Amino acid sequence: MNSFAATNRNFRHAVKLLGLDSKLAKSLLIPFREIKVECTIPKDDGSIHSYVGFSVQHDNARGPMKGGIRYHPEVDPDEVNALAQLMTWKTAVADVPYGGAKGGIGCSPSDLSISELERLTRIFNQKIHDLIRIHTDIPAPDMGTNSQTMAWIFYEYSKFHGHSPAIVTGKPLDLGGSLGRDAATGRGVVFATEALLAEHGKSISGLTFAIQGFGNIGSWTADLIHGRGGKIIAISDVNGAIRKPDGIDIPALSKHKAEGGLLKDFKDADAMDRNELLVQECDVLIPCALGGVLNKENAANVRAKYIREAANHPTDPDADEILSKKGVTILPDIYANAGGVIVSYFEWVQNIQGFQWNEEKVNMELQKHMNDAFANIK
Figure 1 (cartoon, rainbow, N blue to C red):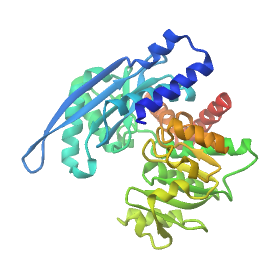
Figure 2 (cartoon, one colour):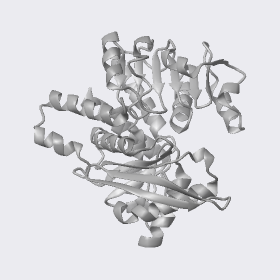
Figure 3 (tube, rainbow, N blue to C red):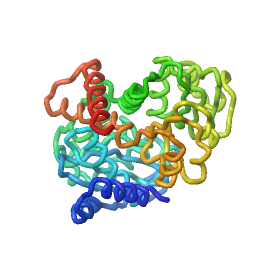
Figure 4 (cartoon, rainbow, N blue to C red):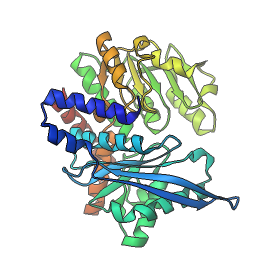
């Protein structure tokens, strides 16, 4: 089941539970605006290559639309529509005054040089700059993009509209980025985990965790869980997976990766098949990578007691039903990974005010938002 079909199926299920009027439900499914653009750039070798970019603005009933820009080969209209819709629900659950949006380009960032990525980002921004605006649609980083990508968008947008730091979030600090933004999604996952475990009379300390993905979200989540006494027994990335029953030394693994090593080559743990991680016996499973990784083919074999959806829609509806029958407690993505958009909101507010918060305030406000949101959805 693709991401768009899965998101719509979950929405229709929520409509029935809430008893929403059918006309209102239909209007909530149709995006406010959907755009497809051609992005043609010269490559470093002198050749010309065209990419397709997408921007979906889903709903602005609660405020400006907000969502990340994704660079990945699988970016297509269905995925961008699904992610924009999820952002509408996520901002509502997190109680930040935004609606949902999403953008993306179908490309493989690892196959492009820095200069090619800059040209691609700038041409994409040239095609959509009139449609984003500070109080209309505020992009942020997502898979395959980062603070440098946001800096290019900021510079390109400012060529047309003047100095506008609030046009994107997730920027470098020197351009108006927020302290704590880089760790925000991972920190939010940990706050969400603590909130749910407390409901069950447990804490992170002493529990076992398996984390799929060691990018921004996965690495921060792993580091923070390790610091709280959690035992991470398995972890994976795009190149492979490792496990260690006594717990992986996360600071040592991060140092290994920072020095250019591959995760699968980390000496202080055993290599394992990446697909086995999702069915690894553990207390808490945290998918931090692509959507749809938990499905009807593997859900019955999941041995975790809890699942924290740090990725967007990692569990498809068929898997939801199977896992529910098994008694697995799932913390959904529209809450569990909301830390990024919450701190993006803080960054936007700071840019508009022209006043920077310290990191302690950012983290304190993030924890408050995550705890309040948990109290409202449980």
